[in-house]
Picture 1 (cartoon, rainbow, N blue to C red):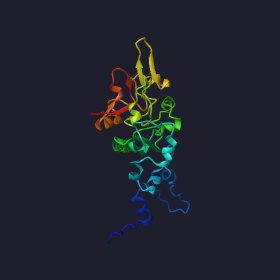
Picture 2: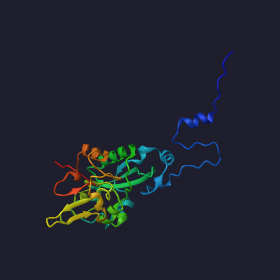
Picture 3: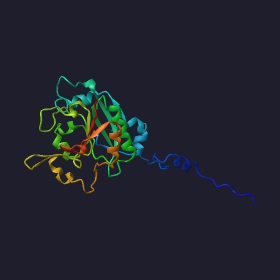
Length: 252
């Protein structure tokens, strides 16, 4: 007796071919919404179907000249008129990132031109690994107030400012330093008279690196490995102070 071949409906074959797309034989299927990606609205969440409809993951990671709208937002906040850094020295990075909510979030970052491609590549590698980054908004959202954005666990790069407690320009002022998950990876310095200066001020519990907590960066962390392999120095290895959020370019 000849065996009968099993018939598989074409709709099922099509659905199985691409699991990232939303497949439904119903007329009520919801079309992907790419508006947040088209306008690049940092902080919004999107689905994998949205990303696919937008053009795919590769289109969501780029380092480009500063768009006019971003440049306008930066004025008087992260960017102040100065003789050292201009618009052409900076780049705007588009990136997606995951968080512990298992959702895809839209992020953006302004960096120096010198590190932009490296940072965009690292952010893509972190995304591929589903590495959790809670927020990636421009500091201008926080009126360029470093304490405020760090308390909100925001990750960022460029801000024309001095090193905290000094008049010396920070490497952030040149767009050559990146801070990741800032609340849980604080900066601190022990002063000679026994007190400890902490930024953000709400991060005291996370100065103790002997216990495990979300977003913690240490030597076993993927973020640490990717940045240091790309030529960055980690502030968590400093001896005069600790800056666990901070990765800055090692310059010759």
